[in-house]
Length: 322
Image 1 (tube, rainbow, N blue to C red):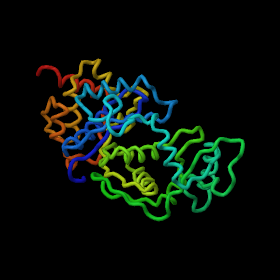
Image 2 (cartoon, one colour):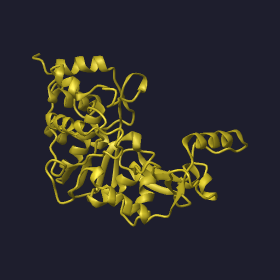
Image 3 (cartoon, rainbow, N blue to C red):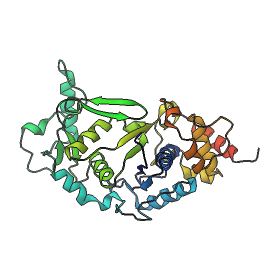
Image 4 (cartoon, rainbow, N blue to C red):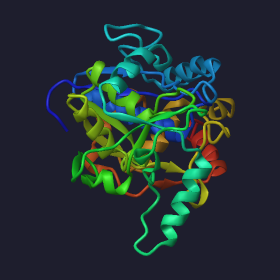
């Protein structure tokens, strides 16, 4: 990781209550920033108005505070890089989009799936990438258009401090990517690049599920003349059979743990122990103590698979008198 005080961030989407996997990612981002003596930023990523729920924002802030996580800048405390809510930053994304060479695309999802199926059935067919239909034709005048960007040719390299070097031939592997949907919603991959640069984020700590998207974000940053941050991806907390925990489905939410009588120190200790950061007899651990225990070199590369019912039982038991 880079030396010196680092500006880090945690950026949840207000689509549902934070779950145990979100808590793990937040703790890691918080710890990496605090260990460096730097600044921790909270950002609300509410790009999609159909999925985002404003009422959830306050619940997420309360859950993070309950866990023991504090931030120096954010939507509730302000800061020099405000606003810290993506829905209030749309003009910035529009400006960035205008600085890139994009083209209109009026393909529907059904048309793209059909084109991909045809390509896959042909000899030497390509993978699941945009087939480039609208690169070679004028957009349909009676349809709303998305804006797509064709990444540079050649290999794009990035580095994760935990999982190592990343290499991708983006033009061949993913093709032209949508940076704004046909309904006007900007893509996460554009907004996050703009926000991290404008907020001076030096280190992005996030889940391993975004590892493969990192070279594309690096390519977008460079195309905009921005310096990409350093990246540290951490293993995920998954449900039975490796399924993702879901905020919208309730998952193993912090609200559910709180209602069951769990202590925040028990949640932190459970995660730290099962991820190999503290000894197995650690019953309770504060978020502040997690900062001291956090060592990326000790993290596993494999994800943590849990049974939600057993996890709740173990976490609640940790907070009870021995």
